[in-house]
Amino acid sequence: MPSICINDALTDDELRSILSKLENDKDRDIFGLVCKRWLLLQSTERKKLAARAGPHMLQKMAARFSRLIELDMSQSISRSFFPGVTDSDIAVIADGLRCLTVLNLQHCKGISDKGMMSIGGGLSSLQSLNVSYCKKLTDKGLSAVAEGCQDLQVLHLDGCKFVTDKVLKALSKNCPNLQELGLQGCTRVTDCGLADLVSGCRWIHFLDINKCSNVGDSGISNVSEACSSSLKTLKLLDCFRVGDGSILSLARFCKNLETLIIGGCRDISDESIKSLATSCGSSLKNLRMDWCLNISNSSLSRVLAECRNLEALDIRCCEEVTDAAFHGLGTMGTEMRLKVLKISNCQKITVTGIGMLLDKCNSLEYLDVRSCPYITKSGCDEAGLQFP
Image 1 (spheres, one colour):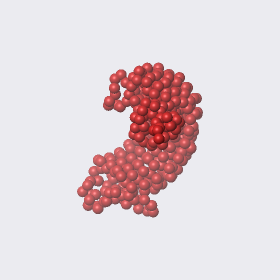
Image 2 (cartoon, helix red, strand yellow; image 1 turned 90 degrees about the vertical axis):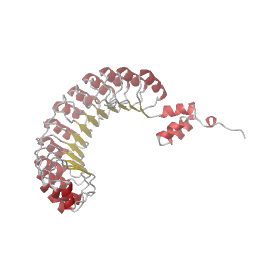
Image 3 (cartoon, one colour; image 1 turned 180 degrees about the vertical axis):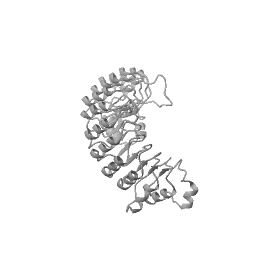
Image 4 (cartoon, rainbow, N blue to C red; image 1 turned 30 degrees about the horizontal axis):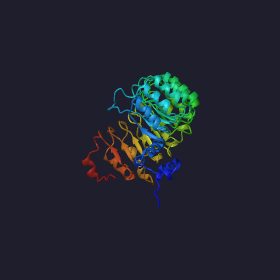
């Protein structure tokens, strides 16, 4: 019986069907080693790629990986290469990889507004873009992205210090499906910009405005009301203008809130936190309120009592908190789900308080008690404390 070559017996579609059943990347790469035909099929079917290449190599990549949907060109902070990704590289990507839906350019410091205009003009299917710490970018280029990539759902602009409210207005006008926005350190963003943003983008579930020092209660109140059903993660680290008004608004509207970061917001007091714990008790999983100096036992005990699904709690440097915050744990019928607790520099908490906590937290994985003078190893040993 004459031998039959597998390439004569199988069509391209049949080979693609075989390739689709290979689950891990190693097996898919081995598939491409069989012959040039299989390599070509493997290349055209590839969906994800991380690369470091200049324009000439990018052109070859675009021809080979024509159906690529995710491209990671990000650079490391500590190992940036020179000259890095440039506007010319972005032009090649925008022209040759038009199926892209995810593009990561984090820390690509050589990119300017010219590169963003290429993205806006060529990648209309883009849904996720990360240009965090691309420090040359301004409103001009990022507005072009908003206008040209109207399916955008995820956008990270952390550390882009020239971003202003104009970008948020462009997103509101053009990107109604935006769900995740990172603006950490964008200090030119204000309450007016947030109001403009949520007038058109009402499905935001993740908003990071850490260190946005010009954002206050007015902006957060607009966000919480407009995105009441969708908002799950809100990060407000060191937003010193944020106070009780923001927290009360979140408590009123955002019943699905899971993560709240308010570290360094020193005007937040017990009353608003108690309201938040009551309203979001079933949903809240991660609460960070380190350096909230007005927080005391009354609000912390309410959080521990109401937030039964809480997994991470950070109250570092909340100097008014004492063992009394944990007294109510003894009356609870069920165990807490707390996995991470940070209480460093809470100098009034003692071994007694930790003992009450451990009795109800068998899931605890990480406990930070640095600079707590009344919590020592010998003290814990003497009290017979058993850590999970």
